[in-house]
Length: 239
Image (cartoon, rainbow, N blue to C red; front, top):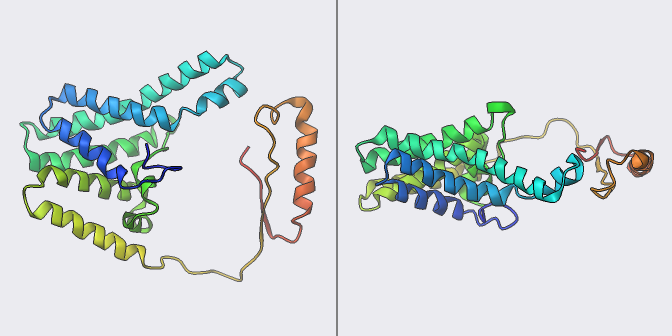
């Protein structure tokens, strides 16, 4: 979890899967599923636990029930990590480290992609998002966030083969290529620059959905918007 904001220690995004893959290296598919689920439960539990606040305030339920719903949701999302570990080990049986180094990363990214689409999708905390400050982000303009995730977990898989010279060198080469891509300018300006205004009314969570506060909230945003009247584009918060 510390690989993501606000901690943003991106290299831990490599360390976490590497430890999980090492534990799965000699595990049965069933045990690998349990290991993956525990990993996912920890990641999702910390990463989305703040949802309990929104559920309690906007869902009209008690805080204990909101906590229970959030934990249940985290447990369900962790099933994707269990599936990835199970599939990676299942495809590599009997245990062959060179095959595991490929099947586990591929299954991981497949699970991330599925999580972003199934049942309306929940793409939060994809591993590639943790790499914004590292050279691996260079793949994002070419392959998207899942391509960055693949680079990280493939590198973690290569650590299973650390006694062989070529897998770590291959991973290092891919990181150097990503760093080169990160140094390139993948966009170009189109048209003349224009002014953009951003409006934030800073309405408290517990107040912004109350019917009696609706008019006051709208008046606040209209007043702030008028102060940015010279902007061609004005952005309001999503809610």
